[in-house]
Length: 301
Image 1 (cartoon, one colour):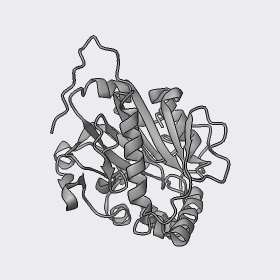
Image 2 (image 1 turned 135 degrees about the vertical axis):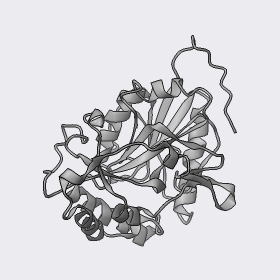
Image 3 (image 1 turned 180 degrees about the horizontal axis):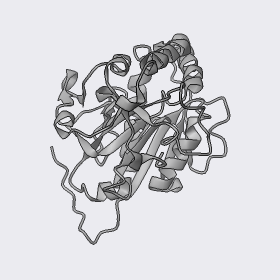
Image 4 (image 1 turned 90 degrees about the vertical axis):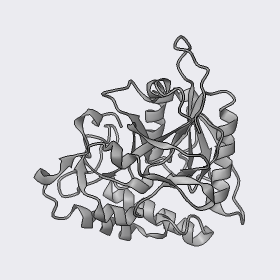
């Protein structure tokens, strides 16, 4: 299935909206707003506030949609229906929309594109752009805590490529996201020029706090119980320590896009949905090789 664009080369640049859904993201949300504000413009950011209690969604410079409790509804399925329907509404005014969690940062290859909007303009006939996912890794033996006033990339220089996290994050179509935004109801491909930097493992202390908070929600409300939300902060920190222990920095090679690998990641699965396949995130973190983040990305996130 191919999207047929009526855009001409003389048309204005694509209008892109960015969405996220948050609950108590005091640390990550400011970085999300800053990054996507640069990419899309702050007026085109939409934060869905899922009962935040830490004050982090107050007085934001963008649109905030506050929602009530989910009640007894299935969290992930209901969340995806809501996000997909809001995105479909936004597509009445925008040419494309992206959805990214507060710790997910989409980047167009800076050696080839001026940003996400430029990448979109160069892909006028592509309805969905999938991103290759890199879990940014904190090496606590060599790297201090993050300076919140400086970009993450450069302070953090290692990552793991996680095929299962290669999401259909940016789309022009009203076809809905499924499987926690990891899948679509239509086929899509991973764009070799689109990267998703996932910061969950980018700060050891924050990983522990966030892990405990999400496990509490999973235990008390049944949220995302079959996902990594089931792991407590100590479990996540133990995993981070395990994968960074004994790594020889001299043996860590720069990440290199491999189109032949990307072309085989997305497959049709249950229910006729399409999503990336691979080891679950924790197994992938243990088994995928450590790579270094190419210097052209330093300072971008």
